[in-house]
Length: 255
Length: 315
Image (cartoon, rainbow over all chains, first blue to last red; front, side, top):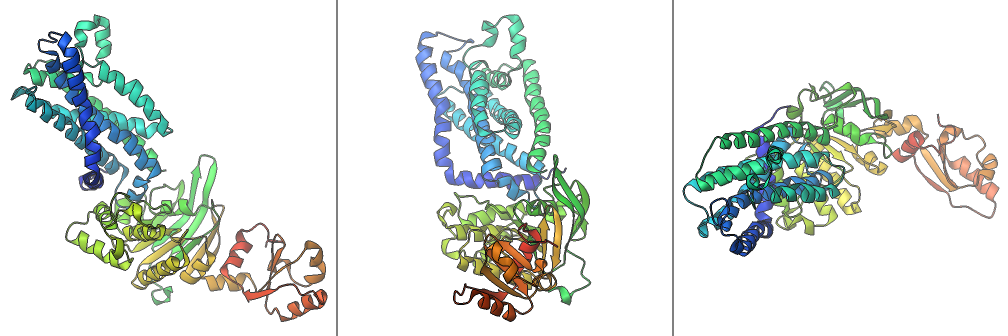
């Protein structure tokens, strides 16, 4: 029933110890994916788009792709990796022979997913800075958006991973959930200029939309009341999903 | 044996524990007392409820009814306190393959909140104790099965447990590795650790365990010191030979059915003195002498007589 941060950190450190050994191989694909999008679409498509949302197209893409990098970093961790530990490696069975409790496992894994989101989002942000695509200092606020994007997608992925019957379900998660989010969350075009009013309120349900708006606000240095709504949505949804995941993780790890 | 400290409370006291998974009754009003400082064997066929019982003892599976006290504490209310004082080696090795044995030990030690320099000191001790030194810095995936098993045992010892739970620790190990693991277990017990072990090897249980409980269909159907169990259940000499059912009437005249065990053509008889019986078989066989084995009755015979369905006139 109890959450203990030291035990959660022990779970986090397990993953960190493995990552320290394998990061060179892990970081490359994760790092290059958003970079490739940025240059292929930003420079390629951008040549035919004179401006979007008041900036060049490549500058429009930049904040959204920061969130996409964070989303992907967290999502891989809490889907395939969690499932392998849970079902094949029996990592949690071994942890639960020690004083670690299911809640600690959940918190430790979510913290780790947030860490990975931070690594990928952070690396991508550095690339943006190097290419002068991150206006300073306002875009530094986006560094706060990276961990909360990670938190949100860690929570969503956790609930999903703990409740699916087999590992094949993840292809649905990626192709029918994350990919549409990637394409329709203000990353590539401003939704509010392309969607009719009734659909705009439906789009508010899209989880990636809110972090992207927050990051864009940071990059543009234009903070409005929407920032509060987007922050509240992101943190509130994360919290609710984590409470749900807490039940799921207990059911899944103990019986 | 426990005779040195007869007043010490049991390390594990399970009272009428029952576990249902849906409609299936995995453990059925099972009682278990594991005294301090003994090696206690939990024996039984696959699916008898051994692993479920162990999981209830360290609190990962919650009993449907009944109570379990470990170190005198109710496991339902003192999970962390109980688990900080015990160690478990699971049936399946849970190791991080990309990391070395030393690194695995450091990661696992942190699950018990061990900190440097204590953490490294403890890891080094266990590397020596389980003879892991030669490959302490090689990734685990390159190690042999026996080496990985020893590492899995080492992980369960990091917190210096007062109770060590070993779920089939020697399954799949070669004979030398088994012997070496047995001697480690004996050393731990001699140093005061209580050991609770499951195994399918009755020779292992007989040689290693001070006490055993034989479990079948979720209940304890026999318990005690191996030698006592054997003495109270079966006669001390076992005669083993092949015999067709049609020959039984002539050969087995006078042997009570409770002292017979048939597995296919193989017949085992438990007798106080086998001499007369063997002479009788030889006389009936005349020139054509069938091979006959005479050996002391062992725990496997008792186990089969209790759990096996092939025993004629099961008492």
